[in-house]
Image (cartoon, rainbow, N blue to C red; front, side, top):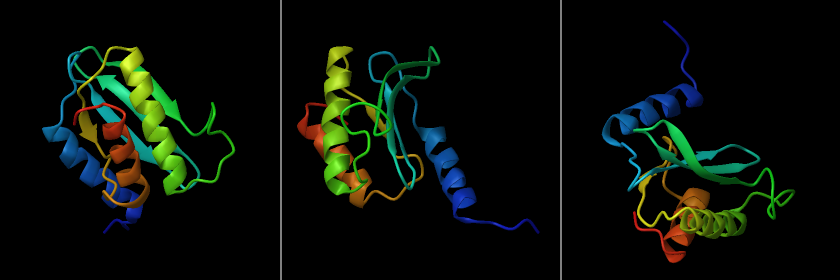
Amino acid sequence: MKTKNQKDYRVRRHLRLRQKLQGTAERPRMSVFVSNQHLYVQFIDDAAAKTLAAVSTVAGALKGQKLNVATAKQLGAQAAQAAKEKGISAVVFDRGGFAYRGRLQALADAAREGGLKF
């Protein structure tokens, strides 16, 4: 029997979620990935297989900041701003198999406050 770890379980959860979520040009998928050091957000049109916009803590104004709830809020606001610049107002939220709490919840709430509709 293959050894399972937390990453394997998260990937399985994400695959289950992806069966139900589909991003379109009018309502792209807001995909979030959380690592130990960084947060990544992409707006993806699955029909055309294109990334419309992306923000992360790797580059830009949030580079070098400690990853916590406050940083996640700032990234959520930046994600909403980047989406508005591309003409995106409604999205399908893809949490990537991660639990909806803490940093991920703060990011989503800040994106909603920034004007995105989930």
